[in-house]
Length: 370
Image (cartoon, rainbow, N blue to C red):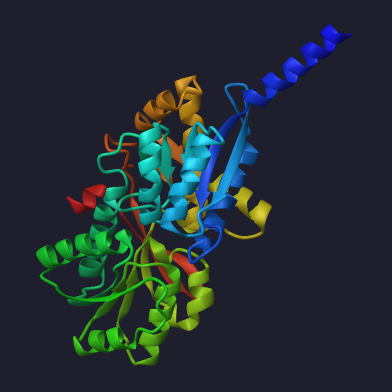
């Protein structure tokens, strides 16, 4: 009897250690919580569809970063040191991902960022990768669209000086817009959380801006759009992927009608079986269409699981090698090939807000920007 009990306890203990833990860093509270919620929806759907790998159960360990850099770093340390995860999905913002990346790099555990587009996120890192395109491509693509498609000549850029994403995207937009299209740029600044932008908008109007560009996040983009329209600005409003959340329309209302932004994914552009199946599965589970973060969260999870399968190991170092060698991975946001720096080679989608909906407007491919 004692022997049988001992064997049973041993089997239970082994089963507990057989789980493969994947950590998830998301801003479930704070200023970026809407992005965190959408990303979690995508990850949860992916988990429902694939709960095991290497014959073992996958366990997701979520940690709230509270939309803060310090908490992102602390959360990464807890996931690796206490939870013993083999890989981590997250974070959302570039600044938060960079704070967490220092820990991942030191502990040699792979981190796959979701929508962190600053080049600095992966620069010089061996264990940090991502499933989103980067700011050089995003900023350049938006400048190409503004100059070629919209015939814009003068732009005022609203820069969030506390966000690496905002500063980085601005630099690449300006480089393309001024060099290729001989456009004129005025820069104005603000800090995350500010709600009053009348002084910057007055400068944009006085400059004779054809467009206002806001490489920030949905909260500030919506507020700037509202205040700009109320002050009589009638030009284009442009933004990066930080605009891609339904909350943009909930907050901005009619003021964001006609706004163009770059993004990684829009359901309307789904043109493969896997992307179409994802849309249907998401609608069935949540009763709504998926936002960009949901698609990238789904892809980040599936890419890590695919890497574990190819590595045939739970060793984080081997899993990281498999992530970095990913080629032609079929994700719902497009085909993903990870380059030597941990960055994917992908298309940029341009979306227009039309009748309160995000509608496909254009696709910019890497070859378009050569």
